[in-house]
Image (tube, rainbow over all chains, first blue to last red; front, side, top):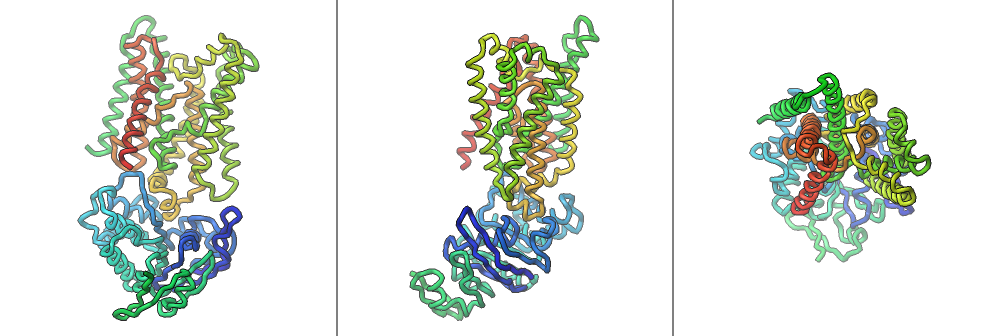
Length: 251
Length: 316
């Protein structure tokens, strides 16, 4: 269970997250949506202790996030940010192996190697596993990072714009994989999404942020409505139902 | 060639150079010559080791391969202390000062400066590492200006004494300091050795490191202290060597092509020893002492640094 209570974040004098409360449904795919500067990434970074919060509490499986030892937390939650430039020269296999660091502190056991192999197989990276990261395309690289997160084997996975820099085909593939992680492996995924239609088609639950506060949350059918989306984005949008999916037309 | 094999090759090369340095052109009083040479060897091994290890650690923390620890401004603190002593008490005080006192004063002021800087800057949680480097750089520039100011005011003869200290030299090594310096460097190395795998994770960057359960702030704080100790000790021992660490670290990255710090650190340290001992051989046998090691190192290093800058620019 991940629960966010009255969380606050200030940069200088400006409040970017203003007493946000939120409880993340288990074994569901949750999307954080909202306009630029709404505080989605900031909230996600606080939920995964990448940045400290200035007030409030974040509870993960019955314990406040600040009271965890960071290595203990690394076995429960994992976070992947949108920009992942790594200076070191790594192969895919080496990168994925880093996912086992919270368990083995760098000395991989046989069981760790099994997890790594399984993660690589799951992301269909076997033919690429000995290639260097800088030789891969954007989509392949993104899959490698997801494989690392998989090897980390946490119940909660936080993703900051996982579709960033992916073309249509790879974006769909990525979302199918994330769906499978939830449906088959029972993971709980929270992600920041910019493309409202991808969020609509693949998530179970949506949380809309605006100006550092939650404006509404609920399942897809309750968020994907004309009046709700207009309020979030200040834009004259129409929601159409096409092939049983709610698609937002904003042109 | 496997990485382990490469390390063995470097060890053999380093040992070969050391033997050559010890026994080449052996003449006169064997006892005296051998002792003075082995003291030089020990000093070069310590300085090579410390310079290389500190640079690799620093570059891993900052995820940047063209930075050197000298941007925190430790060399400027060193020069400021030397100049201030001459300015306030005259050059005789500096030249007659006991080695131990001089070492304590130089290394102490550098380490003290780092402790003050870090404890002040780390008081606030979530401080950006680059902010700390920036503050160090600005303070370094300030100390440099202060140093130049004092150097303008003093007698030119006195200035020549300071000038001597501006360039690292193995020739006037202070032998009684080798033990304490060696102990400090060994302690820093031991600490590093116990955190090799965390260093590997740190090279993925801050966010990945935190995600994988590295206590980022604590580790970085301690590593910065380790770097400060290594740089201070080696600078107090022979004087400032600017580009040295940068070259050997980058040669090691190119040679090993890995992220694993057990190879990168060992490799860089061995390249450091090879460069210093080999360079000193060149200084003694080819230039017959007409130049100092640091002039050669800085020239080669400067050219290599320009090459790195041009190469990095293309990569972006």
